[in-house]
Image 1 (tube, chains in turn blue, red):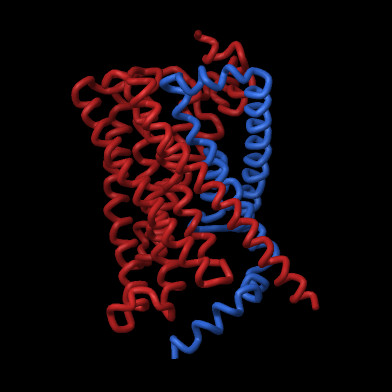
Image 2 (image 1 turned 120 degrees about the vertical axis):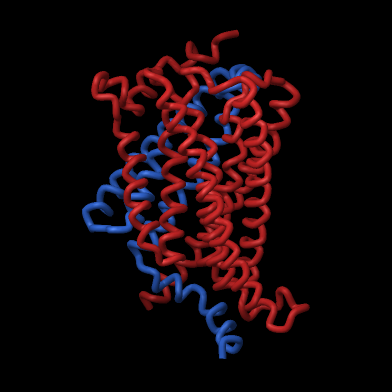
Length: 109
Length: 279
């Protein structure tokens, strides 16, 4: 989550420059790497020691951190999504929704 | 031909992202609703032991709602976009109102039992998270509503209701975000004062709590700068954006290896012999 927000912030920095964007892509790469490593470690942990799951749920502090998974997951793949749009351009996204654009035209006139 | 291939690709990508978003929605709802119940039923903490970490299972629904705004903007079908938009508003409501409850509880705890112990003191920054992310999310949703709603049959009771509702939602989004930004800055000030009262506090996993809340407050500020076309918010974004990067890349010059969070996580003793083996 921390690395994810760093890449988003560098990307959206108000006085932006190309080199900041490159740093943000590096941060994003690091983010994906860390997320994958920790996800794999966590999965292995609960597969190898399933009994830890119940201990973790009962732990008053650790169990609360479960919420960090969906948070990291969201910031992770939405940056990926916007990066994809950025690299391959918004044109094809516009191409992909002609239905809505034409549908809305009569109402705006 | 190329464009056609690409547009096919684009639609496929958008719908993959949409499916992943729904997965995220259910995961966030699962943590957001089950964890408070587990806290009530299993943990039953004393008031003294409550920290702002209680917000952690709740914030994902706000994050999911902000992400929903991003995905609704590009969905090809208006129906799907509206469905996503409404779901995102619901998620935003669940997250923000739960946050209100937890903040009241946390404020009560701070008032009665003073500031948290050194080990978990970084958690005083966590209340900024849902406020910053919520402020960003509600602006994003308002922006998408302004694009998606006009021309639809929603809000049909009023004449030209959809277009007027779209404007209202956009305006209310920015308005709410300004207020949440203010409350977020108030909590941030409180957090900095709390930190200032402590000379030294140990490095631990909770330190990531510096990065995310301050970071989302900066994204909220960035959206405000765009929506209000404000130089003040633009400069504030630039200043506040530098904090998370600074904290992330290690800040304690005295102990360089320990201060590098990633290194700490990898070298830390959190594997089976870690903190969970207390039983």
